[in-house]
Length: 338
Ligand SMILES: [Zn+2]
Ligand SMILES: [Zn+2]
Image (cartoon, rainbow, N blue to C red):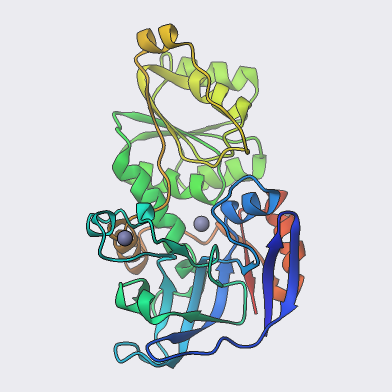
C-alpha cells in the first residue's frame, strides 16, 4: 500500500509499505479520508517534538473497518480514532487527562496513522475506548473533523468567556471556534490576513472580520470599546500574533494561546504591566474523551457546517503536494485519500 511517511525533519516521502498485519484483538481500518493537521506541518518543520519518526502521519481520519480480530468490532463499521493511546489506568487516564499519561502513544505521531490505504488499530486502543464508531449518516468529509472539533470543544470548555471573543486565524480550527462561539451567544470577531478565509468566517456567522493592518486593529478596539473579553489565538503563535493578541484584549480579559508556536518562541511580559492589566493567560491543547464524545454528538446532530472547511483533496501519491498546499494556507483544510 502507499503511505506518506515522516522520515525525519524536513523529509517526507511516499513509500510502498506492506498492509499492516493484525494480531488477536486488533482491527484494520480502510482509510477514506485523512485531514492534514497544523501539528503535522510543524513536526515536519522541526517546530514540535512529540513525533517519533519514521512514522506514517495522520490522525484526523475517517475510515471503515475491513478486518476485525476484536469481538466488539464489526467489519463495515464507520470509524475514526481518539489518536492518544494511553495506559488507561493511571491517575491522569482516570481523570480524562489521557494526554498527560506517561505511557502515551500517538496515532500518526509514534505509531502509524491515517495517511495510508490501511491502518492497524491495536487491541489496546480498542480496549481503552480509542476506536470511535459513528453512524453512516456522518460522511467521511465531516468525520475527519471529529478530532479537531474535539480540540475546539476542549478549549471552549476551559476558556472563561463573557460577552465577546476575538479569534485569531480563520483556518479550520478558527472557523470551528467561530461556529462554537456563535452557538454560545458570543459577539465573535475574527482576525485573519487572507481575504478568502475572512469571507468563509463571515459565511459561518462571524459578526465582524478584520485583516491584521493597524487600521483594522484600531477599528476592532473602537468597536469593542477597548478590547474583547477573550482572545483565542488559533494561529501560529509567533511574535506578531502574540503582540496582536495583547493589543485587542481588554484589561482584565483572557488570552488563550491555542495555536502551536515556532520552536523556541518565548512569551515575554513586563510583570508590572501584566499585574495592572489583570490579564488571564492560558493555553488549551488537544482534547479529552468527553470533548470527543461531545464532538461526535455535534456531528451526528449536523450542528456545524463543515462544507466550506474541506476545500482541497489530494491522493496519497501526491502527498508532498498536499503538504505544500496546507503549508501555503491554500483553501482551508487539505485532506488526503487513497
Ligand atoms: Zn490534529
Ligand atoms: Zn495513563
